[in-house]
Amino acid sequence: MLNFFVSRRAGQSRLGPTLWSALVLTLLLGGASPAAAHLVNANASLVPVSGVVPAIIAIPGSVQFSPNRGGQIKFKLRGVLNPMTGKALTSVNNTIDVDLVINGVPQTFTAIFSIKSGNAIGTFPSLNLLKNDLVEIQGATVKDSVGVPFGTMGVKHPGLHFSTAIIPVFGVPIDIDADARIIASNGGKFMIDIELESPPLTRLNNTVELEIAVNGGAPFVVSQTFDIIDGDGATLVPLGLLAGDIVEVLRVDVYDATATRFATAGIRILSPL
Image 1 (cartoon, rainbow, N blue to C red):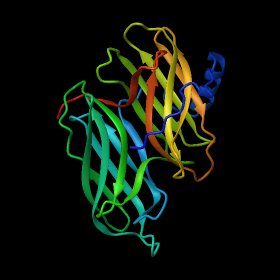
Image 2 (image 1 turned 60 degrees about the vertical axis):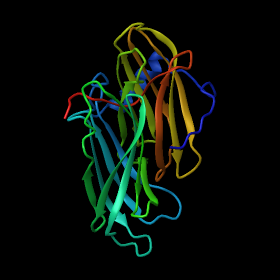
Image 3 (image 1 turned 135 degrees about the horizontal axis):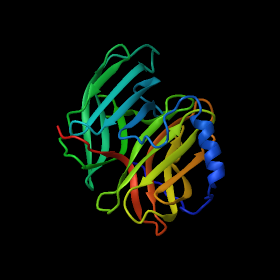
């Protein structure tokens, strides 16, 4: 994983309750589910990486992390092209790596798959986890048979959205119900919504950080402060994306007023295998 940190205080601003309500109303008009219906899973597109690559992901694929059956991970690719001929690719022994932190321990899991006529679908073996185990999601990389990357986890603008549950950091005594999303339309927007379910229910000057890389450029951090009042907190940040931008999502982390990380992107296991 790439790591690039900027000051968590640089360029921060706070959205007031009135502005936040107006922005969320604008986003959610059209039948979206209420903000209170928090996610329990994570969904991201599989998008191409920049540079000389052994395969081109012409149509974004998908990777999904489920909290059920001990933790399931599914992926799908479509429209994978041979960069030399521009035709649909057929190849074997490709791999997809997912970088996770399970109950505080970093681990990488790999699945081997074949691409036939530009398409592939697969499922990782169950993680064999138990209820309430915490799985932080730190990235996914698609590689060819000799280990050269050609895909990563993110979004293409405009297109499908990135969404993930937000879980407590392992070892931090806090209980939350939360999620984060990147809306890949109208310039792109990052939003996070948190319900704090254990005291203290009011926490001021929290900070959410979204680390991304756009079109293969250097990673950078989008940062925003927000308050949790009586257990509820939310914020929204415009991203200023352009049509065709490829956004690699590297991390989503939440810090309290003392800069202690207390929540992050991931899933809490709901049922064992």
